Amino acid sequence: MTVAAMWEARAADGRGAELAAWIREFALPAVRGAAGLVRTELFSAPGERVLLITWWSGEPPRSEMFAVIADPPAELLGRPVHRWSFTSEHVE
Image (cartoon, rainbow, N blue to C red; front, side, top):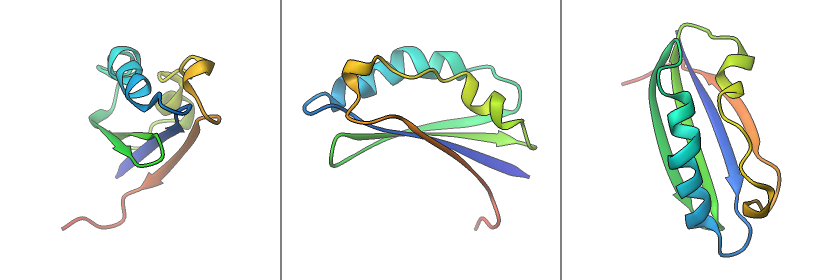
């Protein structure tokens, strides 16, 4: 079984690049080497949104998937971070 943990935030106006840089500098190193981690993907989208998807083998506890990624500094955020997880059902 593969679980995808998705971490998404909307940056404060004009701070999307800074939020993405914060993720590369702090969140990605924090998650590297975590037990069960398969891969990470970082995305950006219109509206100053940044999305980090971490892929896990097995079914790690939800607390482990998200505990390693802290919230960024409040001044970088346009709203609170959203976190959710999905279980892979089909891949081609």
